[in-house]
Image 1: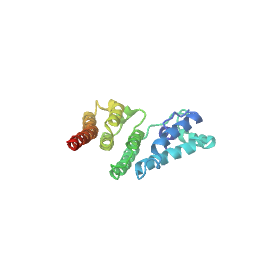
Image 2: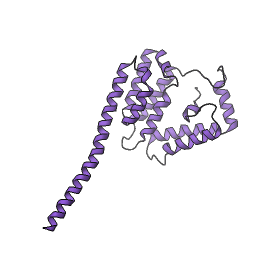
Image 3: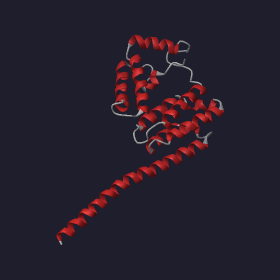
Image 4: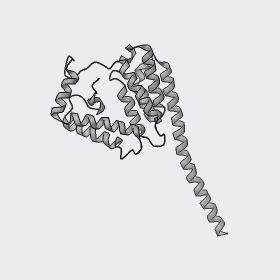
Length: 213
């Protein structure tokens, strides 16, 4: 069974201090704790991973054992081979199943963005060296999942995946389309509130004038 990358899960470097690990954990826990995201299964999964990583990395003895297991075949303490495309694809498929069951009115989009980023290797260009069929399937799943993000979050992902666009122009076009669609929705939602306020004020003004006559 593959060893989870607890350092990546907590967004810290392998040589991070205990204080840095605790700080990162608290920051992530504030975002994804179930109490802050009721009935959001994706956030619950993310928080569970974060809590598991913290329980190991915050304990000196457990962290030492974890480092030994994680790096015992690597050339140095803080390097490890990239995950194979098979493993990445399986993880992406599991995420897609979670996303398919998401309540669109009750989920933390930051948890989804976090989960997508966790799938991407540190050296994203390394994806281009993998099996082309699995590579495309993996990226297609990422793209479909990103459709539920905000325009700003998709832009974040767009920048991160930019090195892949030379080979996958379809990915660039699809993410760009999603950005425009979400930006249009967000603009309408914002303007809808403003319009509602204006109409309410106009009605109040009409009623006020009518009652004065």
